[in-house]
Each structure stands twice: as structure tokens, then as C-alpha cells.
Length: 340
Image 1 (cartoon, rainbow, N blue to C red):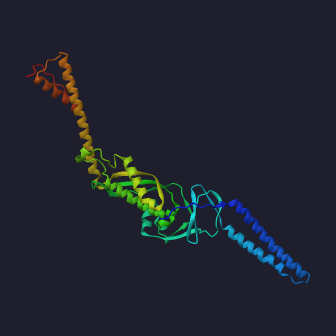
Image 2: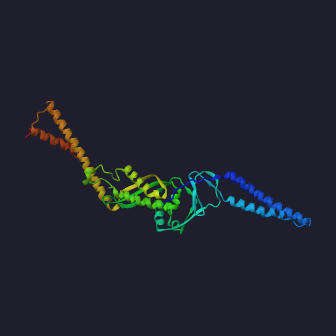
């Protein structure tokens, strides 16, 4: 396992002054040497060796200036440069602005051959298959450490109860360890896409979509529909565990879509409607019973009506019909006694 090491790069402005001086000095040496040689030729004399030395010295200084110029690079906030010298990892520079480092540091870190996983990753990130199917992907020395958003496509998976559901997620991630991201995995971007799909399928399979009728005693258990925060935290923990090998940190993970698969959506909708009707009826009956009890108690306590068991039964029956009926009750006036 690789580990990020901090590397320091010198300020590019001081080295820029040195390079400019070398360029000017090299031009001066070449021009001065040519003028000296020409002067000896005009006098008909053979130029000494000291007169010729300035010309190659100027070209040497020019070559040194060109080589030193290759060491300049700039870094913006949220960027880092990985320094690799002849295949050996030296460190990571995170200093912003114009910087100068060893000009022999690699400017790219090789290429990785495309694999079938790239096509899947492209489908998750919305990249066209033409661009994703390129034969290789070149890793630059610069790498972004800014937060990125992966908006995954809808996946059809089975929940804990075996019901097919559609689920999608959005993940906010960033590169925390540049050495692991570049050296421990082949392509960390496609790795994040694949592991996100794997983690989402795993989390969806360990929770039920919703509480079923035969699980009323365990209504406190976590479900995908009722416990979004808990499921999101579980998904985030799963992603952090899987992506740690690539040096990727997960800032947030949320479900963006959750629904039953089309083949069972109608059946589950009818079940939910039935549950809602039963719950509503239960609430209405509980309220009606309490109202009937209150009415009988107040009528009896106030001495308004003397109730025997038959009168109480009739009164309770009439009140329950009025309170629980879906349509308005039509009153029937009894001009005789109760028993006629």
C-alpha cells in the first residue's frame, strides 16, 4: 500500500529570474565569442582557444536554461502534483501558485489499458461509449483534490424481502491520498464508479423496502423508505470502507430514487392503499367508540335519559352507524315506544 508523502517545490518566481539570466547570459556569450573570432579574422590572426570557449559555453548555458525551464508548473487551489523521478515516487506537492521542481520529474504517470469496467463506469457517469472505449487512459502528474459528484443511474436490485426495486444514489467524493489513488488502483475514477454500484446493491439487499404486514412486531426495524438518514449513513460507511484502498474520501452519499420495480408496483400500490384504508378505519372506529361512551355517560349522569341494556345497545348502534358510515345517515323518527 502506498502512502502520500509531502514534497516541497521552490517558488517559481525566484527560479524564473535565474532562468532569464541564463538565457541572456547564453546569448551574450555566443555573440561575444563570435565577435571575438571575427575580430581576429579581420586582423588576419588565428583566434586563440580562449576566444572559441565563449561560444560552446554559451550553448551549454542555453541548454541548462532550457532544461531548467521544464521544471516550472502551476497549481490552483484544490490541485496537487505527484512527483515521480525515474519511476520512483518522491512526494506530492500541494503548494499553490507558480512552482519549480526537478525538471526530470515525470509529466505523466503512464497509461492504463481500457477494460470492460470502463464501459460500466461510463454508463454510470454519463460518458459516451465512444470516449470511454479508448484503448488507454493517460494519468497526468496533476490530480484534482476537489470534491466531485457521482450521480449514478437507476439500478434494479432485490431488497431484503426479495422484492425487485429501483434505486439510485448520488455520492460526493474527493481524493484524499494522491499516492493511493494513482499507484494502488489502475484508474481511480472508474474504481469509484464500480465500487459505488457494488455498495449500493449491497446496502439495498440488507434492508427491506418497507414494513410488511407480517412484520408489525418489528416495525422499528430500518427500512429503505422510512429510514433515509440511517440508510444513507450505512451507504456512506460502506463506500468509505471500499474506497479507502484508492485513497478516496466520501463526503456524502444520498439516495436520489427509490421505488418498486414496474412489474410489482401496481400490486404494492394496492397493498399500501389497503393499509391506508385499514389504518383510517381503525382510527375512525376508535374515535367513534370514545364518542359513544362519552355520549352515553353524559346522558346518564345528567339524568336526561334512563338507559337499560337494550336502550344502550340501540343508542350505541345508531351512533356507530352515524359516526362510521361513509354517507350521511337518514334519520327515522319513531313515534311509538322503543319496542314497537
